[in-house]
Amino acid sequence: MSRPEPLDPRALAAAAALCPEPVERVARAGGGGNSRLYRVEAATRSYALKSYPPKGDDPRDRLGVECRALRFMVDQGIACVPRVIAGDAAQGFGLFEWIDGGLAVDPGAADIDQAVEFLIAIGRLSDAPGAAAMPAASEACLSGAEIVRQVAARRARLAAAADGEPALAAFLADRLTPRLAAIEAWARASGHPFEVDLPRARQALIPADFGFHNALRQADGRLVFIDFEYFGWDDPVKLVADFLLHPAVPVSEPLKRRFCTAICAAFAPRDAAFPDRLRLLYPLFAMRWCVILLNEFLPERWARRAHAGSALDWSAAKRRQLERAEQLLDRVAQTYRDFPYGG
Image (cartoon, rainbow, N blue to C red; front, side, top):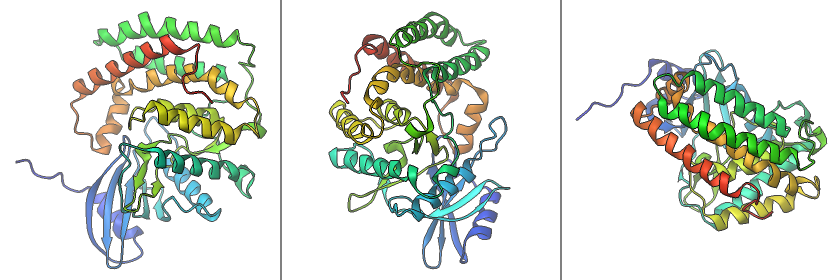
């Protein structure tokens, strides 16, 4: 039997420093793909201590953005998110309200409706006091050209890491690159202003990386949404596309259509072109996900997985992710001219 991994002394020190009452116990409580999570038990309640990855090659202020977003939402009356208790930017730790709940696996119609209600509430905050000062969302995609640029940049990083990875090199050169060119040409031929950034008046505040992988279901069925490291201004089309494409928690096709129809109905009055833009840009976002799925091939990204406590073997993780990228590319190739979710 293997011994449990010892706790990071930095986490113990951060818990003691940030907690507003004496700490009785600290234990690992999982985490996402990039961050570690600890449960801090104190005399009267429990807290969630989040350890953010070292900045290294990625200088994004994940802790600062998340704390700012949560405080903004709570101040505007949104209750289905955790409260911020304290943060230590120098050490990369944040302390939050602990939410008792399980992962929102096997989502149903009630979960979709709660997600839609939450996103509509955030969308209304775009005109709230303080909203204009919020930052751009991480890797905002305000034009078709920007999506293509991001795919190309990720593809280049993957190609640089493909020495000794013949399957990856062949996928990038023989399959992904020509498919991206075909979809870009199709999108440009539509007449959509492909190179022009979406005006601020049609942007919205979005919780980028939104999905049921970042939701906890409480005992009464209510969802609490977590992880807002990438929150900010963006084209809400990206929010919808990423929700439909995110592989972490499978959502059935009928529920995807339910989600898409409701979101389009909510955003179209403010932005009449929203449904058409979603249909046009969705396959480009799918191509973006093809390269995101291959992050495990990048040593610095795998280091973040290790920081978060991933127990996967690196070789196995790379094989699995390449298979997922191949499957997604096959679906895109078959459906990119016909958006599959209505709207």
